[in-house]
Image (cartoon, rainbow, N blue to C red; front, side, top):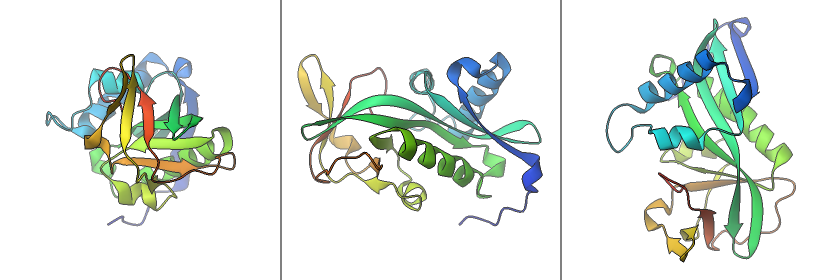
Amino acid sequence: MERTLDIDPDRLRLRRLATSELTPSEATATRALMAVAFGSDEEERFSDDDWQHALGGVHFVLELDREIVAHAAVVEREIHVGRHALRTGYVEAVATAPARQGLGLGSIVMTDVTEYVREGFELGGLGTGRQSFYGRLGWRIWAGPSSVRTADGDQPTPDDDGSIMVLTTPTTPPLDPAAPISCEWRPGDAW
């Protein structure tokens, strides 16, 4: 359950930065935030591949008293839904410092991310096990089967079915929510 944010808004600063605009210390602090927030459990930990997936797009960095306390990134990917190839704002590396979780800081970041994706992409996408958090912001679970596009053809990713969420935008064409959805192959987690 989310507690009421009782932090003076003047102590918060939310910035949108291209990867190239992150200072070395900001990149290090953000990467460290991911490691702490995701923990060391082998199944959940934030890997180097996960970090690489978050680079090359726009970072949403929330600071409290000049300390990075929450983050998300949006990178461009081509997601296929049925026969549509869609320019997708794909959300990566979403985390809030464990001591600050439940205060609404992640919601502040994801509200801005959602607005950014709606303004600039044909579709939003993300993979998560926390569907209710994103669902309140308009993201919907994709009902169709998922796969990854490889040189050898589409390979089903049934373990990802039910954890892929999408966000429609003003430029999203009509889509069948039960249609197959696919992403390009990449090292680490495809979705």
